[in-house]
Image: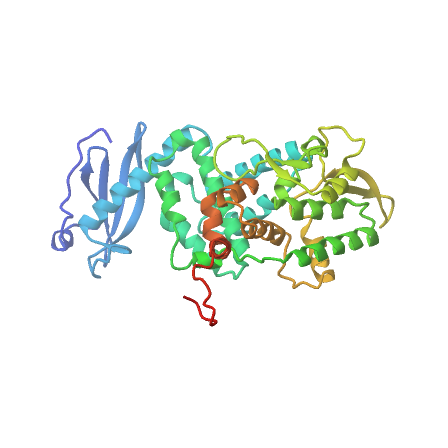
Amino acid sequence: MGRRLHEATITTRNARSHLPEGLHWRSIDPDVHLGYRKGDRAGRWMVRWRSGAGYRQAPLATADDVLEADDADVLSFAQAASAARVFVAAARREDRAAAAGPVPSVTTACEDYSTAIEARQAAKLGKESKITRARLRAHVVSDSAIGAKTLHDLRANDISSWRVRLRAKKLAETTVRRISSDFRAALNDARVRHGERLPDRFIIEIKDGFAITRNDPPADTERPSIILPDEDVRAVIRAAWEIDQEEDWDGDLHRLVVGLAATGARFSQLARAPVAALMPDLERLMVPSSNKGRGNRKRPPVAVALGADVVQTLALGARGRPARDLLFTRWGYARAGGLKWRKAARRGWRPAELSEPFRAIARRAGLSDDVTAYALRHSSIVRGLRRHLPVRLVAALHDTSSEMIERYYSAYIVDALDAVAASAVVPLLEPDPAGSSL
């Protein structure tokens, strides 16, 4: 391409009609040329750009020789010039990304994030869970419209369109939220890993793509709270004890349910509590802080007061064990030949392992199937509010914020404050001897 470019007149339909068949070029940038390939009836737009010592070229769209331009499949000269610049800019971004190594994509972001999550779980629990990887592969990587996209080409409308397709699968709302959270976390993790190779707007594309839309349920339905009265909580604990004995849990299931009911902690928090967290003399349990929130900021554990009955129950599982061992454990099983299994060694509880046993517990306690172990947390929070504990204290004991308590439990706060206000009411009128008030 050393010789001077011959500028063809291709800017108008009439001018192009006088050109001979073949390929004609016009410069739209020092190193970018817009081409017009004339055929028997209509022509097509091309683009070529300098790449290294030579040029690369690619087709763009049909020229508006016969059909009117629609800025999509049929382009005028001005539209074709604009499309050529956008195409070349994207190609050059891809070249720069490829020069720095394998091009990061949605698929690699999901896989890298899943690997990081599994490594973190292995460090904490001794064995990783493949749940996050399975979710992302089934609903993100396998989606042909977004799974193969490179990160530097990912746009907010790609993410929002994916969210619409995800909701069309009619999954449970909690599942949709979990998948979306995992995908968003994977993209943000990739932004940290490959920040220098991604456009400056990448963080904005993520934010806009996951913005709440009319397709999302209203906030009031995002987290239905099932509040159990104290008697139902006791029924759950009794049912857990019965099933524990019948199914040979050796007290593991019962102790975990007692811990959840007594502390109102999340399952993931109690699953990480060491033996040393139980302080029988002080009648308290130091509950590890949650993993929620951004960054690696490590917060101190939360001291939760326990009743003497709860302390006695939990102490049975801690007796004679090293301080660093997990307080809440369960038996792991190994094959004993054929279809038989045997108890191998105790290990920590893993995500979702309580779901199936708790369904049986809820049924045994006479509760509906939509009651999950999380209802024990809701009930603990409301119990504190009804006992007139300050909202800030209730939030601190349950490792959450006052804003979250006010958002999801405002009705119970009002009830509690009404009771406090009513206790301040005193008679102000002296009774009249005739029976009326003065």
